[in-house]
Image (cartoon, rainbow, N blue to C red; front, side, top):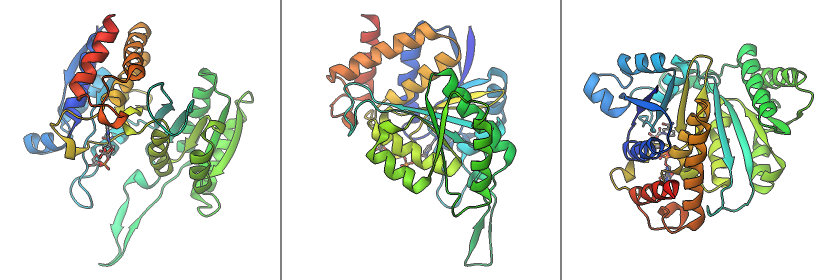
Length: 333
Ligand code: NAD
């Protein structure tokens, strides 16, 4: 039995993680859950949004899955999501965006994987006021940080029979930081001659993705551009309700949906559990529970294709619970 840390999260997180848990529990995977707090409730209960017991649990189990966690805007504590990625050095954010039959979207057969550097860039959190009326944020890009994320992207491409990696940057303007990122990624690309490599300036990349997403395969991005483009890519395959993700480091992995806590829907049992369930599938694959992962995928695909029990974002009328019930029934049959 493998123990996994489970963080329910904020807003709609607890209801969506509960749905994910029901489905993974029915998959036949040999898993135990260790439920730990982080976010708003943890801040109220423990005086910190990221209690030491949560960190210890993840350190011990090395694998966690989490619901989204709200971040106060402007003031208040810093992002727990960013803190977790830093604490466990989860330097690789990997977000597959693949069209699924039955999920309404502008394109069919999109199959992209966004690889996002997760620890540097403007997310280093080095910000300060300059007097009263100006503020400054420092963007950090290092050769080592760029090298390891580039290796991760090319390694992922090689292992998953992908044909091409596109390096995303703004090196025309950010000559030092993105210049270093681009140069380092190109250098790493030489170790993978079987994989085609190209680069795009981020603004052009955004346009190309909404016009010709089929021309792209693996996208290799620094942190901020990766954050923005991963929501764009989610939009290409049906929206945030269906976009899963994983954060990988050397010693730990944390799985989570791309979407946030959508607090305005809290307790309404309305949102789509697919993104978190697909994040659970990525976790099962990471744990070598391939048969369990396939079982979940088959059940989920059947419900999406039939369209009779899907949530409002997919054009249906089902609640989170009803869609989850349908997935469980499809897994049994
Ligand atoms: P959000 O992703 O929570 O919601 C944006 C919109 O997307 C929602 O209004 C909803 O219409 C739709 N949506 C999101 N999840 C959905 C689902 N499962 N099914 C159907 N539709 C869905 O983004 P936001 O409103 O910008 O952020 C809310 C909070 O979440 C903020 O505090 C933010 O900091 C936090 N956040 C957390 C994470 C994370 O935990 N990794 C990621 C992004 C945002």
